[in-house]
Image (cartoon, rainbow over all chains, first blue to last red; front, side, top):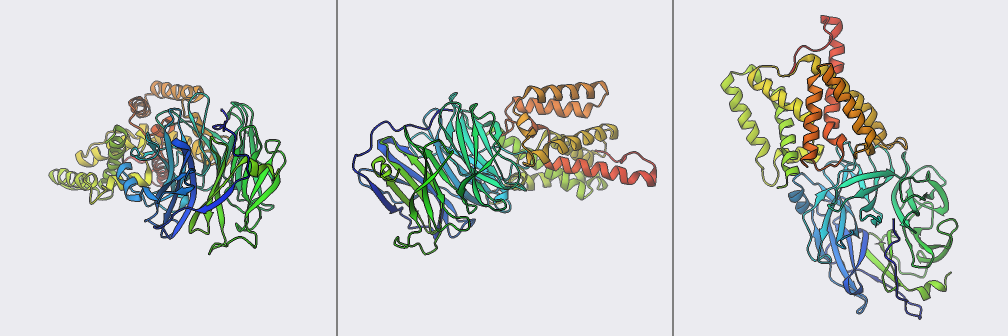
Length: 351
Length: 204
């Protein structure tokens, strides 16, 4: 399990911190952003949007960020319910979370949730692949991850590459229980192995951050009895075995988290820094790979910052580009996706 | 259409036909009417109405069905059309018993109730393949040919890439056939005191 794509170039020496809302001329409600760096140092983001979460008109959207212009392109649709239904040759009622990553051939792989019957407990995960940095996509294929009608599986955390070329996809199950797993996908995108990260009814949305081929740490959203804390798991054998989930000192209001290990640097975690609501979105830093944490900055929730119509800042996605800058995307008031970009110099002032 | 899509739609359509034929008790009709009804039902199940066929709708709900379901559904269709039973009650009792045991082992754990995940064993683990081989050999020795047939068809379908899944469990068992097996066994137990039979005599 190799480290994530490492940033090799140095960031600008001057502190940089920029924030902007992604374009949204289409959907009343948007949620669950994900992004990958594409050619030219650009960023391609995906999210889902529609009249409301779970509505039949929800589609997966994409937009491209150019660091040179500092602007996002107008959004366009990548996947609709109708398109998924036609290609998957089965009924599809609604679409959900997307996550994007690359496979060993360097292709962009977009995994997205679909539901045929019922609520999110009836979810399954699908995969589309792009060989041209997200301009065009293959027809979707269904991933088989559960023996129970293959339902109850969702995605939120970033995929990672194993040293042998297989893709590791963190998933979680929401049928009767709530628990995390790590799927192993072959080059064709078929599930060929899986490992349980947790069990029971209180852990979901795993995010896995590798530090070496053998060592990785994972964080999970907590949906159990108080105290409400982010859960942590660890592996020291390349993901074959994982430690039992343990509560960290960081709070979690039953909300998704994002995490990334910076090249030659600290471990970052974006979280809702409260036990009860999603009105505060903060950045936590760990210098010892997750053993101890310090809240370094509050992105949202300060009285001085502009408030969204609905004060909810959630589902963060964090990544570092090859130039060394860090990007955070998250749901801003359920009506927009917000993008933050900062560099190491800015971060150094908060360490 | 990929091979796995075709196989998946065929399986869901076949199960739908078997259910429809059994519910309407097709074999009570005259022979020609049986064939006509079955043909009409097949058209209704497989020909898309708008964008999706009934088989595609069922597939959205159930996913691809196991070979145990396909063998039982195929036998049920045959019985309803011809009036002749294909499967001996002894064979069916053994298969349903094995399916019920497998379901009790697989589903509670696969739903995340413990750290142990038997579903992961289906990705080609030595333990799983050895157990499957031993069960098949034992069934063959006991002349329980239905179990042997289901395992052989499952193995061939798996090797041919007919399933979307790369997990052997999915070729052998699904929740639908598990519920059916359990219900069939319970029905057999319930009938025993009244007529003295160990299992239902009606077969497929």
